[in-house]
Length: 93
Image 1 (tube, rainbow, N blue to C red):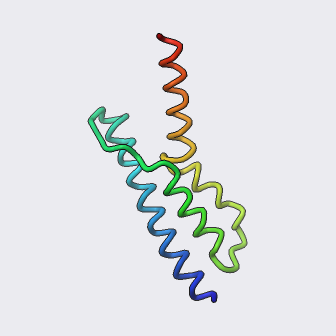
Image 2: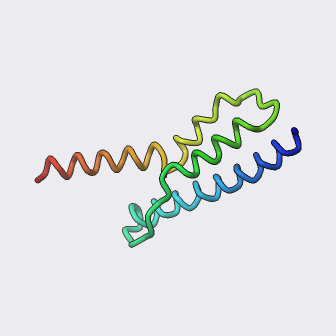
């Protein structure tokens, strides 16, 4: 059973890290370089890394799985920015 957990953790963690990198690249292209970019993938990267962190066997820092949602632009930072942008836009109208 532990082998399956390790393999699934590596698979989900790798996919999640890839999505997080793509989300940050989209942020960089859109907000720093001011160029058109595709939309980011909300919550997916943080969710995949968080699940990988939780299912990893004998993980003493399992409680840190929430950090993935803070590091992923598509999770807490991106959603928070979107809420801020919509509220600021509403006030300026």
